[in-house]
Length: 434
Image (cartoon, rainbow, N blue to C red; front, side, top):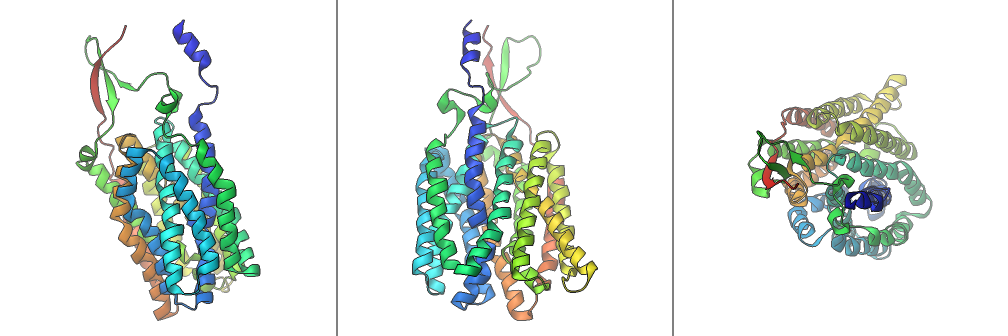
C-alpha cells in the first residue's frame, strides 16, 4: 500500500525534464550571445578599437581559456556548495559586464579587463560549469539525451541570435549589441535561476525518476545485493579512458576553436560578404541543433567512443573542404564552403558526448571536479589556437596556414576517441531488504 501511495504521489513529469527545459532556455541566450555570438563581435571590435586580428582573438581566446583555468576550482565549489549558489551571482556578473562593455570600453585594455573579469567569468562559471553539472546530477540512463537537448537548444541560440546580433551591430554598433545583451540576461535568464534545483535527492527523488538506486547482479544465492557507486577523483585518474577523453577533448578544441572564433573573418577571406557569412554561421548552428538532438538520443544506446570518433573524422573532412573553398570561384568553390558548413554543423554536435561519457563512466558525485580538470588541461590551447589563427592572417594575409593544422588535430582527436574503452563499474555490497 505504501509503495502504491508513493507512486500516485510521484509527479507525472519528472522534475529533471523541467530542469532540462529551464537550462535549455538559459543556454539559448547564453550561447547565442556569448559562446556563439562572439563571432560577430570579433570584426566589429577589431575595427572600432583599431587593434589587430591577433590581439582581438587573444581576448576572446583568453575568455574561453578562463573557463578552463577556473575549471578545477569552479568544479570543487559546485561539488561542495551546489550549482545554484554559483549560478545566481554569476548571471548577474555577466549582465553587469555587458552593460560595462557598452559604456566604458574605449581601447584594448579596458576591453580586456571588462570582458575577461566580468563577461567571461560570469558566463563561464554559470553556463560552462554549473548548468552541465546540474543536468548530470538529474540523470543516469538518459544522461546523453538530457545533455544533448541542452546543447542542441544552445545551438538554436546561434542560429537565431547570431544573424540578428550582426544586424543590430551593423545598424547601431557593437555598443548597442552589448547593451541589449545585458538586458536579455536580466530579463530572460536571471529569474530562471530561482527554479534551478541542485539534485533530485533535494526533492526526495532519484535520477531519471527511478524508485530505487541502480544495482549490479550478484553471484550465487547470497542475500546481499551490489549497488553501483561513483568513482572518486583518484580512482578516475587511474583509468586510461579518462586520459584519452582529456587528450581527445583538448585536440578537438585546438582544431575547432581557432576556426570558429574567426569563422566570419575566414569566410570573408573566402569571398563571402559579412552578412552572408553571419547567415552561414547561423545555419551551421542550426544544423548543430539537429545533430545534437539525434546524437543525444543514440548516445544513450550506442558506443559514445564510436560516436565521438566518427564526428571528429567528419570535422577533419569539413575543415579540409574549407581550405579549398572559395565563394567567388564558381559553383565548386561555393559547394565546398556549404559542405564545410553542413559537415562542421553535424560534427560539432557530438562535443557534448564527451561530458555525457564522463558522467556515464565516473558517475555524479565528482563530475564537476573531473570535468574541471579536463577543461583546465587544454586551457592553454584555448588561447594558443585563436591567437595563432589571427597571427597567421596578420602575417600572411590569409587563414590557409591555420586551417591545415586544424584539420590534422581533428583527425588525431578522432583516433583518441576511437581508443576509449569504458572503465569497469564500481559496486558496494549492501544487505537486501525483504
